[in-house]
Image (tube, rainbow, N blue to C red; front, side):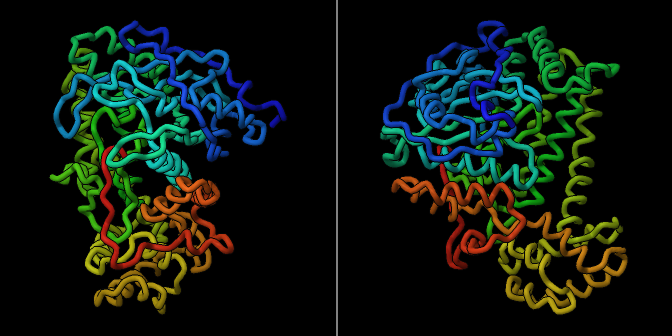
Amino acid sequence: MTADNGLDALVFDNVWSRFPEDFFTRVTPSVWAETRLLDLSPTAALRLGLDPEAIDRDRLTALMSGATMLPGMDPLAQKYTGHQFGTYNPALGDGRGLLLGEALTPQGPCDLHLKGAGQTPYSRFGDGRAVLRSSIREYLAGEAMAGLRIPTTLALAVAVNGEKVMRERVEPGATLLRVAESHVRFGHFEWLYQQKRSDDIEHLMHHVIERHRPQLATQPAPLEALYQDVVTRTAELIARWQAYGFVHAVMNTDNMSILGLTLDYGPYAFMDRFDPQLTPNHTDASGRYAFDQQPGVALWNLTVLAQCLTPLIDPERLREILDSYEPTLQAAYAILMRARLGLEVEREEDGALIDDWLEMLGRAQADFHRSFRALSESDVAGGLVLAEEIADPQLDAWLTRYRARLEHESRGETERLAAMRRVNPLYVLRTHLAQQVIEAAQAGDAEPLRTFRDLLASPFEARPGMAAWAEAPAASAPPVCLSCSS
């Protein structure tokens, strides 16, 4: 990259600002005093086609404070609606974030979205601000998901400011510069459907195709092809969440990306001890968005989206496409889980072997990630490393079945274990580690944030002196529950 490949290299083509006026409201970002940049993500910079070292930190800080915009930016708040915990809410939209501009990058168009930018017409009773805690959590989540090869939004940078923001307690204010291929949500279509605006639904679908899925334009029925694309990508996304123990915790339809990205990180969690019913959101008393409910919730959300498309696509055809969701998810999940167990060849008994492995982890209250990593590092003939993680009387019986299954593999043990270590992370975004980073940042030390971000971006290879970042929480520590403001 050239030395001048910094922020000035960004070229904007703000298509959303050319949509009908009620699709958005132009809003000038609030200016936050004493803004201080905490970290910049090389992952996100490269996604934008920028050289991380060429980015002017002072200029980026001014951008994140709301004091300045880059040439070509046109800040606006998007309007959408959605189902929140199963109930339709017509009053949604960007309430604390602004789409600053749509950049053209070597990898395609990319939104720059400033979270914590102040109040908008869609803030309802909110203050439009973001707190440091939630901003760091979202910043790290993007790095962790990208490191695990799970489709996600990213954040170019996170900054703290001089604001004191009231949530459950008074917290430092912050801003986050989010990067995403698009912010189009299921909720955009719900808003238009509820208003009976079928022409605008069609316009928005063609926008998504032309801007983000141009290969679908040549299909015999492009709109059907787009819905099929959404169903397939959503199924594959959920398969990855389930395979890596990720709980989104707020799977409202307005938090679902039309491009199959993980969007809007709130009280999410990567599970520690394996618990299929893990619900890290303390406001979700019914467990609607628990870990084991996520595949069904995504299907429910896709059904809501299908209803919104009925003015343009035959309902029977939508049902046919929707019926592909479950087999797509199951197939993607099976591939991921076989890889995590080092099984290259598909066999009929694999499903039962995987299910029994997970049931054993649940019975033993074993750590989800350390158990897979131990399996990647152990000679299964001995299983000694595994025994330290999984205290279950069925372990030996399961290992006997596993050894027998490995006899059908063509790879040798050294090659197999190396492949397993490439898909079973050592460094995981655990809630207690994120909290340590947050507390350090609140005390003025951003070095742990930078260290953890770097590890999460490359989570599979062990680094010297970094063992503390691979630690699970104490066995006696209860699962952490967070609020929707997290």
